[in-house]
Image (cartoon, rainbow over all chains, first blue to last red; front, side, top):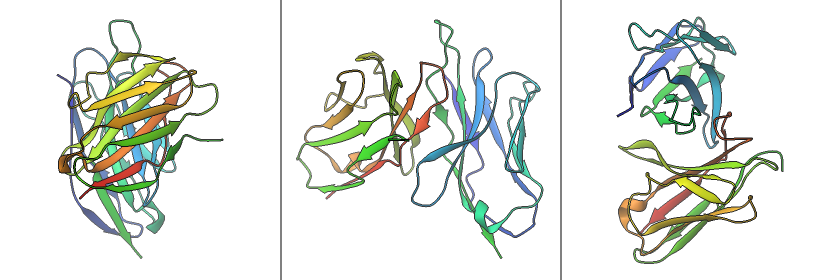
Length: 116
Length: 113
């Protein structure tokens, strides 16, 4: 079946540090890949996505590249801020037989805390 | 409203009671999804609706769980005879069509005593 494995953390960084959160996946075919973020007390928000190999998703200074050869979608940010403190979820959505992707499979989430 | 609305935001109930969780999707969104976020299990897909029908309910953990959607809008997730392992945050999402970007609500935190 489909699965997503991400580093569980928690990850604690100082402001302006470099961030990497590793994510690898197992899926058949060519799933779409996502990073969602959950700020304290809030629901999930899409951070970025990529739908095919070698695509790079980016948003708010975060980036992730769809690497099919290593089945990875690692999240990176060059300089984190205190406001980036949240839980980050890697997810995939496979194409079903009808050609649509709807069922999100999530990793277990990584808690990031950024200290001033 | 502008986003997906879930109610209640918090629910505490005794083991064995039935609970109903409500989701109001974004207006015009035809697809609606339920997920469960629990410690140790992460986020799990439960069921999705296309209109009022549920083509995939494979994630419902037991027959104590059921969901319905009426008028292509509001959905209710019902848990009968709640157990402590049902304690979790239940998230609802909607999308303009199946396969489009899913927009999540803030969730209902369910605690079973």
